[in-house]
Image 1 (spheres, rainbow over the protein chains, first blue to last red):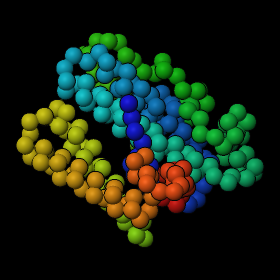
Image 2 (tube, one colour; image 1 turned 135 degrees about the horizontal axis):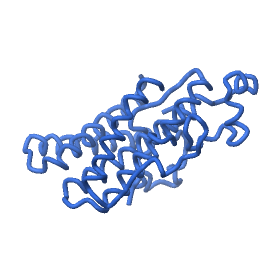
Image 3 (tube, each protein chain N blue to C red; image 1 turned 120 degrees about the vertical axis):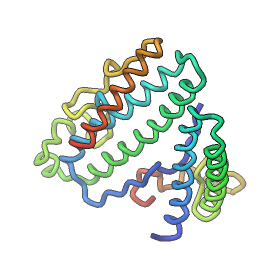
Length: 146
Length: 83
């Protein structure tokens, strides 16, 4: 069970819309290494963890990933506010726009809708924790390219 | 930074402290320094949340009770630029 706090974990205030940046950052929302995948990964894996420390940390990190998801969604929303047709076309956001308008949709930067194939939940703690190490390693790419 | 932003920043800072401390405690449940830090952060969060709710609006469902109007749904929501 969760309850909502009506605040972002860290404030997001983007004054200048930037469709080109939104096209890349959307991947951190619903891409293979995005926050949606991260939260589902940890919140699904926690059921099979064998000790209280592992259950607790996956439960609580998974919860925090949902707060990250909300911040990234806010970034995409604010980057695409009030864009004109010309701005959408010039930035190459028209392919996204024809399917989703300016709605925030969980997809990878290349347009692939969110896919749970990018995460694992095997019921084996060692396997799952190794997958988590690999997943956290992808943060470097997000920091470099977003 | 106006008063509302200042009050909300206090809430965020306290919540960040207690979130990080709780993750540490998940794997170090008897660390006395961390336990004390967590307790202080929780107190700070409750105080900051109550101060924000009194002047600016609810942060949690229960902050919104006791009024003539259910102001939970009132803007701004967190992703709207005003907050």
